[in-house]
Image 1 (cartoon, rainbow, N blue to C red):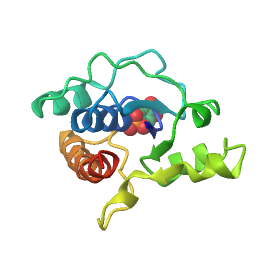
Image 2 (cartoon, rainbow, N blue to C red):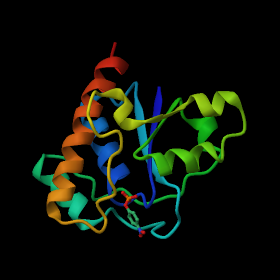
Image 3 (cartoon, rainbow, N blue to C red):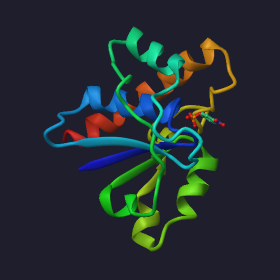
Length: 149
Ligand code: 4NP
């Protein structure tokens, strides 16, 4: 099973989602990666604020490097999680078939929260990163439990 986490920049939210889900599953069976729909930060490490909040929770995401989402990712992954509705729309816009479209979900559709989107914390304060961490962590608990079955 291969899971791809996608946001806009691939430096704040999806690197956290990649690191958090990886920490909850057996890497021999479940592969996790992340990508962004924009190319502004390609080749860069995650935002220092994401690296820090992950580190405070025992997860090292500092070695990840940003890459752009491409249509070939539909061939390489079984499940593609978008952090917000804008990301979802951008990914669906690149889908070539019904099968491609069916692989794409909103991350928070996995859990029963009032918020349906993981908000973009890029222009936010430090609190924003902690809130985003907790949302992604809850969703990844549910995803990991299902994938491990
Ligand atoms: P992300 O956050 O999509 O969670 O990685 C962003 C990072 C950078 C930018 C936007 C969102 N940016 O415009 O550079």
